[in-house]
Length: 101
Image (tube, rainbow, N blue to C red; front, side, top):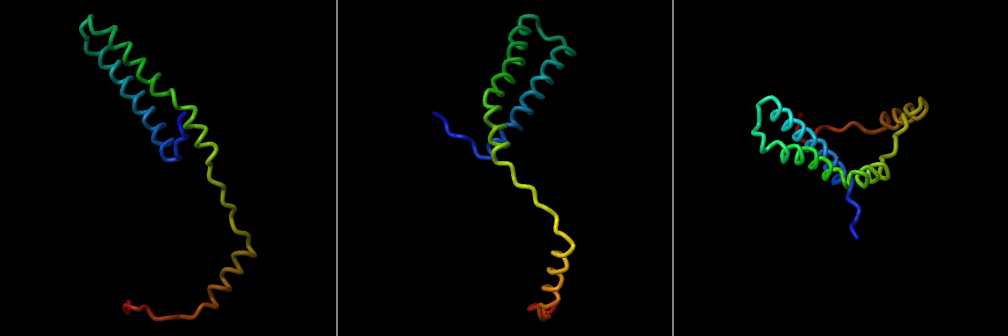
C-alpha cells in the first residue's frame, strides 16, 4: 500500500511526465529525420511509446492530490476594509530607521 504524494511531489511528477513525453517525441522525430538502422526501429518505437505510458501510471493520483490540496482563493478587500487598514496605518508612530537610512 503506497502513501499519497505531497503537493510538491505531485507537481514534480506531472513535470516528469511532460518531459518524458517531449523527450520520447523528440527521439521519434530524430529517428524519422535521420534514418535509423531498420533493426533498431522496432525497439525504438516500443520504447518511445511505452515510456510515456509507464510514466503516466501514477498521474491520476498526482492530479487527485493537486485537486484535493487546492489553495483557497483569496477574496479582495472591500472599500471599508481598506479604509480601516489605512486608519490603523496612520495611527502608527513614526520612528527613525535604526541604521540612519
